[in-house]
Image (cartoon, rainbow, N blue to C red; front, side, top):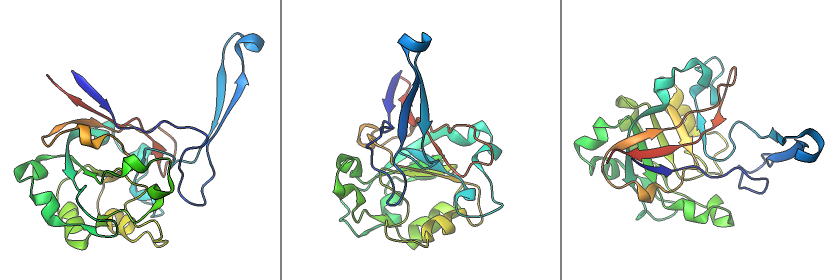
Amino acid sequence: MKVIDLTHTITENMPVFPGTEQPKLTTINTYDKSGFRETLLQITTHTGTHIDPPAHVYAGKTTLDDLPPESFIGKALVIDCRSIKPGSHITLQHITAYGAKAKAADFLLFNLGWDKYWGTENYFGQYPCLNDEAINFILEGNYKGIGFDVMGIDPINDENLTLHKKLFKNIQIVNIENLKNLDLCGSDLFWFSCFPLKIANSDGSPVRAVAWFEE
């Protein structure tokens, strides 16, 4: 079995959404003092490679802990969007170019090639986002989730979170952000998982997203 890690490592100096507090990793027990090491982890629920449920933007909507485990595992397909210029859009044609595979997937993962900017100011730039036709196709499908190797589904300066709200308004779906290594996943369907921490009333959670291939 071949496994590919699609997750950024959580560190104290990692990129976070503008205005969000940086993670803090504080050692509270040491080998010398206690015979073991233990770390106090202080992070927001949307740190690093993470997952959003509908409750991220709508009060009373589904939280992550409401969703069954099978919501976070299934067949995925990477949609190669690396040719799209900054500030342009992911279109329906980028998805339908994959034919029946796009409809057979449980998760559509959009490869903007943006993970190469992780840790630089460019990561907060004008990454491409879904246009109306593309997101309507997703809403009309039977997908468990979508994912991106960028900071968010919305443009980083959209304080209204327009696409988040459209995605989560009427359907049960999850959104994974800040993925990496999507270029290593090929152009066929593969197994994918993005299990969150099981936090009560959760509006989001870091995940360890992985792809694997049965050889």
